[in-house]
Length: 315
Image 1 (cartoon, one colour):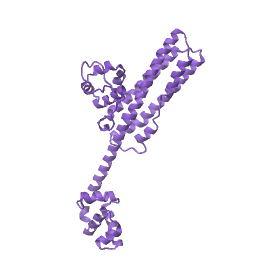
Image 2: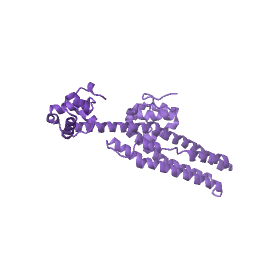
Image 3: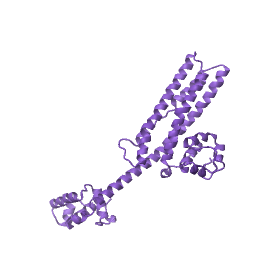
């Protein structure tokens, strides 16, 4: 198994694997790149090299290195998948149907049944890809803009991302088993069947790219978005009232320290030699002054304002 690397020549990659020509088109890479390396061609044509090679090595060798999602370019993946959809829906599906029409006898009921089966298959593929374009792709673009999207995530997509190749397999089997034909039609059907096999492989790769590369990249984006959101909330909370610490009494600061250390109201009362009711009153005043109502928020406040060292926090 040869894993292709950035310094390999692009022409060598294609010479070894002509099937990659289709992927070049989906990336928007034009031919005529001479003896330049993969990295040089990608940089010249504004394609992320790491993402390009991730898909190429998955396609040619079935290899993908998980855990490096942060290196993937999600915009490049989006461009690739959108172009793949346009190619398949706009060219490949109509092309195969045209081949079938030319190869089948319109007076043969079984032949017409095969054509109907193909149309059902094409419709299901169309619906599958349009769903992604209408739902998944806009969601990912929103993540890239730093927007929060409720009610949808990569996990939801994965649960609904089924296999689209079953009807195609059934179509192949029927053609092979049940359609004897004259020499001319047999040649046409054989050529059509060859294209169907190629498209089955293409669809399988398309699904693998989505499942093994695109979805993990989306999950990384989601984690990044959540982390950014939490960081923003913490920053806003800290900056909301920078002089709040001055508004606290010394006893209230003592109560905060005890709370952050994980003490109960009873333990705080015993520690500070005050009543439990007094502890509750202090806690109510602290929440009102700081507008912080969660233990995690209070812990962050105490650390940021140097009321306690992080090593003394019970996590």
